[in-house]
Each structure stands twice: as C-alpha cells, then as structure tokens.
Image 1 (cartoon, helix red, strand yellow):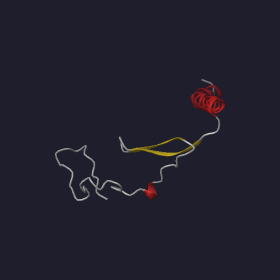
Image 2: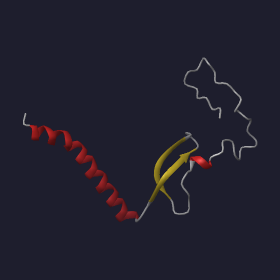
Image 3: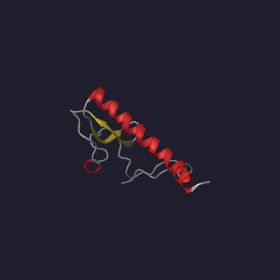
Image 4: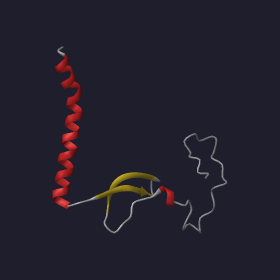
Length: 94
C-alpha cells in the first residue's frame, strides 16, 4: 500500500470527527446563540462533566465544594469504613 494512502486512511476518521463536531457546534450556535461551557455537577450520580451552562448559573468549582454542606439532617459518614465484602463501594472519607 502506498504511504500516502496509508496516511490518509489513518487520518480520515479523525478529520471526519473534527468536521462533524465543528458542524454540530455551528448548527447549535445558529439555533441557540452563544453558549458558555463549564464544569457541571450532577448530585444524583455524584459526577461532573463539561456542558453548557445557563446564563443565570455559575460553573461548578471543585475548590469551593465542601462535603456535607447544607446537609445538617444527614448523619456524618466521614468516619465510616467501607464494607470490605463489597469491592465496588467507594471510600467517601475526606
């Protein structure tokens, strides 16, 4: 196989993804206007991801996060140990 053909075959998927992402973002911009992206937090799944942020909201800042803030009714779980029988249980100690 010719070297140029091999390079094109290897780069084509990356170029296609880049063109698709550019077109997708451009069409979103035409529909919705300018958007601000930042880190958002989902408390249901306890995960963060990058996404569009509404104009009246601020992005999630991990430095400002205080575990348990606003949860006075909840018991303090900082001193509890994970169950050694369950290897998938997360250790929530800080």
